[in-house]
Amino acid sequence: MKRAITVTVNGVTHHHEVEPRLLLVHYLREVLGLTGTHIGCDTTSCGACTILFNGLTAKSCNLLAVQANGATILTVEGLAQDGRLHPIQEAFWEEHGLQCGFCTPGMMLSALQILARNPDPSEAEIRHGLDGNLCRCTGYQHIVNSVQNAARRLKAEAVPAIPVTATAQSAGGKGGR
Image 1 (cartoon, rainbow, N blue to C red):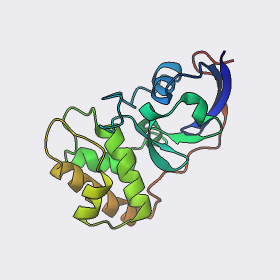
Image 2: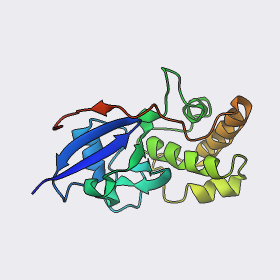
Image 3: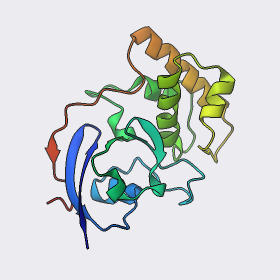
Image 4: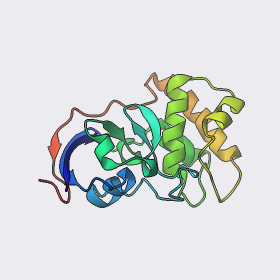
C-alpha cells in the first residue's frame, strides 16, 4: 500500500504517493528526475548518493522515501542559483576537483557541510570531513584544493556555505498526485 509523502527538494515542495520500500535515492532520481544524486554501491560506502537532509549530509541509498516525509533536501541540482554556479561548483571546476564526475555531487554536498561547520578548515579537517566519499579515478588532492578554494570564495563573497533555497512552492513531478 502506497504512502503519501511531502518533501521539499531544492526549495520546491513535492507531494507523492510512494511504495514504503522505495529508497530515497530512487525517489530523487526516478520520481523527481534529479539524476545528479548517483547510486554507486548501495551499501553507503561510496558517498555518491550524498545529499543534505534537513541540513545534514545523509546517504540517500540508506533512507526510505517515506522517511523523508516533511524533510527538506538539497541535491547537487539545488546548488546553482539564478543560473550562477555555487562557489563550491566554481572551485571544483577551477581546481580540477573531478575526473569522471561520478563522485562529485556527493563530494560537493559533503564539502558544504564541512564549510558550514568550519569556514576555514585545515587540510586534515577537509580530509576527515570527506571520509565516506570515495573517488575511484584519482587521488584526493584536487578535491581538497577545491574545498579550500571554495572556503576562500565563500569568505570573500560573505555567503553561507549552504545556499538558502527559494520559498517552497508546489510541484508535481512524475507520479505526482
